[in-house]
Image (cartoon, rainbow, N blue to C red; front, side):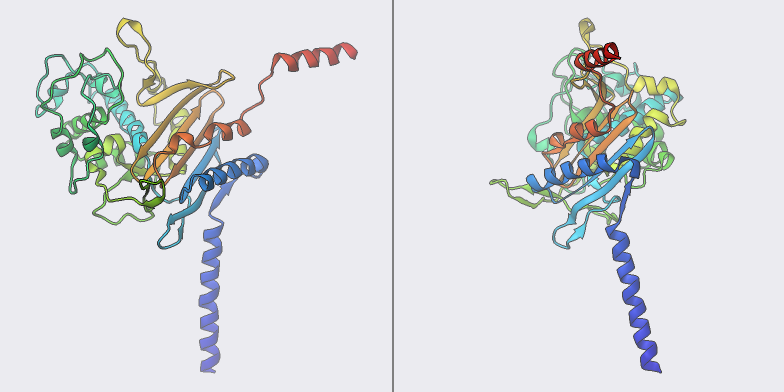
Length: 385
């Protein structure tokens, strides 16, 4: 009798484990109405990962505010053979700027920050410069702050902090007067993050929670920190000198959390993109201001606004996009605002984020564009009738 009970117990444990495996395997969201488009997109992503030896990634697609597809592909850890899932967290590089710019615009809307105020007005520890350096110059990447050296961009120190990152350049003169050129530079957003900390009296991770992740329910977006365990964090990979994929060396990203130091995944990035289009948390004025063109000296339009690149595809459709690359990870996020289409990918190997096939994937979900040839053909058919 005892033996039979023991066998039944063992059988129950096995069944529970198997059901858990099955659930893990089916960790995917997909809309059956778009099954053909999703299959094509999945095939493109899988081919890209295989071709470039990317260990693992997540991909997500949303249209008109609804997630049509979300999945983790490949491995989060090669050593443990742990699969990447929808909730696996990856380094997203410069896409971190989009969250910082979003917080900045919310603080401006609240009256906590003013775009034309000087940096040292809010952050006295930052020395005054020859030219007035305002907050709008930081968010617009037009500050004139010198570019980081390679050793500063990829700082390998441990136990770093945002303030230690500011100390790297705070005593240097501006390379050019603010407002003349737009030059992407991680120092701009790091300094903007330090201003936010000073004004709010809170550390940047807490500010991120209050303004973005808690409010928008982004459960897998947070600062990377090598000194604490983070559930669902992917391992990080890099290339060696002969382009083989190896484990990346340790990096402490906390000195550049506002610019390049966040973890996230494709599904959270798509939710963030949807929020910019639909969420009531943003006023209509703020939604407009996030993508308002930036004008440089002599009324020259800049390429970026609040971290976003403004693009157009070959059919003339407007696109807002951002790609990010750091050691051990990369991501890309694109929004077709008029078509209400949002696509994101994130992976645990850097360098390649700009090559993700997001624009090819977008074609599967965009309406066909009527060409002159199509119109002529339709006109002829009408004449026959």
